[in-house]
Length: 239
Image 1 (tube, rainbow, N blue to C red):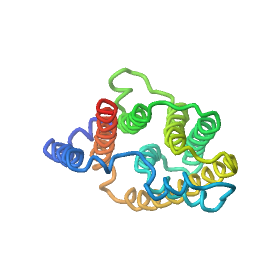
Image 2 (cartoon, rainbow, N blue to C red):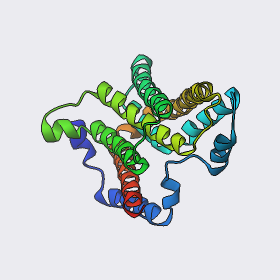
Image 3 (cartoon, rainbow, N blue to C red):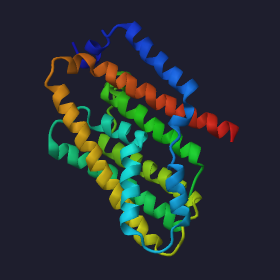
């Protein structure tokens, strides 16, 4: 029996419980799903002037470590990756995409509606969960290029952050240096978060429950992505 077929044996009531809990989270805690920079950090960014290398490294690392949407996508990307060289390739593609559009967007002042960009970021989480479940191969008989998809969604993740930074009207004095520092911090935060995820995944993969619960884990991941999309679309509709 295929992986997808085996995973379909997960009890339906368990999946309903998962969706129910996520629905409750959406109804009673929508503020927690806002892809945003903390108010204190926002004020600091707006008031800063000149080159502030280490503070912006810290802000970048903090953004990544607390950026649930980025972490959910990375979790999905490495879910079935076992070799470090494969993990390095995918994480590098994501980092290149993220860094390129973040720097390009801020330096050129090109932005888009933040709700739409963040909805696409939520869709990236849904895509990766479906990809892990083998849904595209099963439904359409094709397998998307996962490396290309990781790079493309990295572009959207970076553009989403650029859109937020542009809204802060950051001082042009020291802008390039501060953006580079921020981006370095983002990559440091990504490595720290990735290390923690890999350690936990390493322990989980050694247990017999990993394959039994892989379907449920990716279903939760997919549902979380849909909740992110729904929140952003509601925000777009009422803005």
